Amino acid sequence: MASTPGAGPASKKLKLDEDGAGPSETQTKAERKKAKKAKKVDSKAFMESLPGFSFDGNDLKARSQPVGIDEIRNLVLSVALGTPPPRWLVVKNPQNIKHFVVLQITGITPDRLSLNPSPTLPRAYPIALPAVTDAEHLKSLHKLFSHACPSRAPGDQTRMHSALSAFLNTPVSSEEKVRRVKERNKQQSNLAIVNDPSVFLLTPAQMSANGYTLPSYVELPPDTGTDSVDETTNWVRLSPKRDESWVETPQAPLLDLNGKPPKQKVWALDCEMIETTRGKELGRISIVDFDSSCVIFDSLVKPTNPVTSYLTQYSGLSEELLSKATLTLSDVQQKLLGPGMIDSWTILVGHSLENDLGALKLAHPRVIDTSVIYHHTKGPPAKPGLKWLAQKWLGKTIQASEAGHDSREDATTCVELLKKKMKYGVTFGRFDHDQESIFEGMTRKDKKSAYIGAGANIVAGKATTRVDCDNDVEIMDAVISNIATHDVVFARLQQLSYALEWSTPFRPKSALDTPTPPPPNLETTLTNLDAAIARLHASLPAYTALCIFTGHSDPRKMIELNKRKSQWDTLTRGAGGKLPSEIPKEEWWTAQDGRDLEDETEKAKKGLVFFCITLPKAGASGKAKKS
Image (cartoon, rainbow, N blue to C red):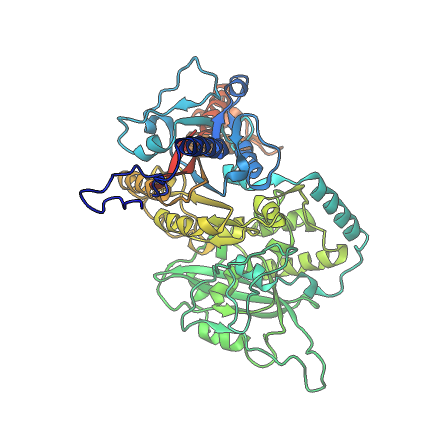
């Protein structure tokens, strides 16, 4: 009978297998030899099955430019969806990668990592990261990654385009392109006049994604269909917090006394705001009837708190004008929700109407938003301005007065845009691009994806899960909690970019005229970022790929030079333009300035990308295989 290891002084100490079981004393020598050989074979097979990354030096040496953001995106898709693999990075056993985490962290530069690329190396060639570094910050990157591969943001000679947009949007597959062409042809054949404006109503999901506050009686569907532009199975609502000053449109009966649906009113609404000691407040509201184009309601509104700015250049309001106001916000709310006015059947039309309803503190269920039903030339999620839409589709100029905007004019313009849309069909005013969100392609392939970061509901409408937050700690917490249940997790950490003053946090329109908060402390930000990356890696499940890309470098000089060039063009353009002799020399734009702009643009486009994979390890949860 075999003795138990560690049973007593007389017991024989046996060498344990990795699973903790010792060899049987009844085994013959031949059997033990055979078992040992089988174990070696299994171990070799296991090692050969492990996924890994390795740069293709020959491909990178032959390049004239570093790796593009679109190529980083295509690499992720090749692993997640099985699309054709890239040449510049060889992926071993991609089918065994269970999760892919991608972080965009702008602000990590070679000098911050104490990297000194050799001038003799090709522009796209990876730079080795020493495991031991004198760098004061971001030591976790040296421990995790063996190389930093140069990357390049998209753009032209004088402008840099969005690295985020380049990563999140991809050309559609040939199969999807054929489907879209058929759909467009079908829509073109149905361009008859649309008689019912409710065709253009935003769904509750669209309203929530665009920042509207929904009435309590409107429920978001738990899982919208694949044809929805806002599909999600884990909705994170961005609606503003409601306090006691908010009201909601009462829910009207589905049928009137005659058993018929009530006649729906269609009214266009626009508000102007002022700045007070408690933030933005309503200063004026105008409502225009869709059918008659007559003004239904137009009123100045008494501010609740002391005014700090009338924002005259935008609002058209002044101290003298507002001194005539007799109605408070509460008075306006009561009038709008009074008999014969707004009920839950009323369709409200406006441009980025969530801002106007937010100023009114009114939750309403049925809206048509001209910033959604009409497209920006870049396509969603970018939104067009009302002034541009009026010029482009109506051939008229609005918001041109030095006295500021006119809410009646803006509301009337929204009426005209809706009527034009109804006349020419649902595809009018849209710019169809044969591109799609990477999350849309993942959804079609039954892959779960997550977007975590500021503006999640706006930029990632097709992601399975969206978490909107702007703090790096909260973002990393959300990343860690979502990895195990998602195939691909994307997060954008921006605190370092804010600390470097390369960018500023997103601010809603209602806050644009308030002072910009100071940037975060750089030293603290770097320390926190380093700890967050280390914490993330310690939490990664085995067989998880991690990619960090920076997107770009410091864009400020490029931006400043572009501003100067734009000012020069404005001064000298057209028949009424000035001659150079009429402009101070310090404002001139020279050929050297043009060359400087091209140089600074190229510098701004420079970035870095890092890769590693967390692999299983006996006695530990995992280890990173560097690339």
